[in-house]
Amino acid sequence: MPASIISLIIGLLAGIAIGYLISALRNKNNSADSALLDDYKKQLEAERGKTENSIKLTAELNAMKSTVEKLSQQSNEANRIRTEAEAKLETTINEMRRASESIFDETKKIAGALSNSQTRGKFGEAQLELLLQSAGLREGHEYTRQKSTTDADSSGIPDITVKMPGGSAIFVDSKFPFDRFLDAFGTEVQSERDDYLAQHTKDLLKHVEALAKRGYHKSAGSPDFVVLFVPFETLLAEALRIDPALLEKAFKVNVTIATPTSMMALLRTIGYIFTRNKLADNADEIQKVANTFLKNITLLHGKIVAVGKAISSTAKAYEDLIPTAERTVLSPARRIHNLGVTGDKDKLAIEYPESPGEVRELKAISADDDFIEVEEIETDK
Image (tube, rainbow, N blue to C red; front, side, top):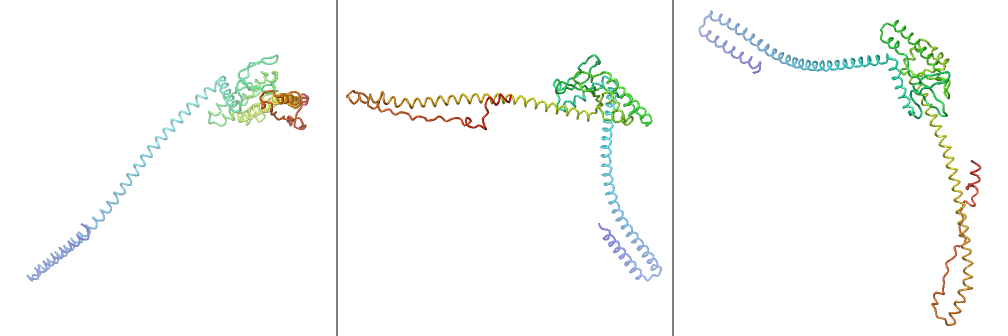
């Protein structure tokens, strides 16, 4: 029931009670009771005020309770969402942690594998072979692997031998120093890192000098340089930061240091040379086939002309034969028939086929500009 209605009812009841008491006291005309009535009246009014205040307070408490319940629901929903978000975040963090651990483990394995010189050589060779295939070069055709070379001044086994048109070849070594480079990026101390990188630069220069002593570039048909392939750009970049003259020192001993970027440019250039050389070979073959074809056409033309002349000669003989047949055979036959010799007169009415006349010659016979004589082909050859 609404608070206003309750308050109204209580007020009515209090008013009735006060009116009843006043009426009773007036009837008795008792002054003492009148004073008591006033006290009761005051008490009733006080109670009514308390009741109204209590009703107002109850209404306010109910409104506050409703608000608190709504806040509680919102808080519970927020807690639920937060809990779910925390669970998802924890799952994501765990996945990232596992991924980081996996990457760390794989990095350790790779670092451990690359610490071995033979493994580094195989890794570099695999990277180099990917570049060779990307450049369109084929093993066994444009390049070979691990081919021994020996001569009076050199001996060794280059990792990759890239063939060149004309019989020349470029030798590529894919082994590279890596230990000090790996140590440099395994420390957080900058001074130690610089020391490791300086040692890495020295190791790279030593490897260049050792490669130069193998004398791959002295092999027959080889250019005057050998390529040292390093599969990471940073291997050379950090060494050049320490020693900017490193490439010049390598050039002086006929060694070219190539990273994946420069190596791809070199291999694509070689692939382009192979393509152009193949086109040139095809052009020569096409020229030979074309010469043979034109010669055969000329021979065929000569035979066609001979056949045309024979047909013309036959037509002329046919035309000469008709008057002779008329004069020597058919005319006497008609006279015999007229003299009474029986026979089929229709058979004497022979219709001779029309002579083909002149045989059409090939246009090429008179087309001096378009026709190629056999002598011209043989002269071009």
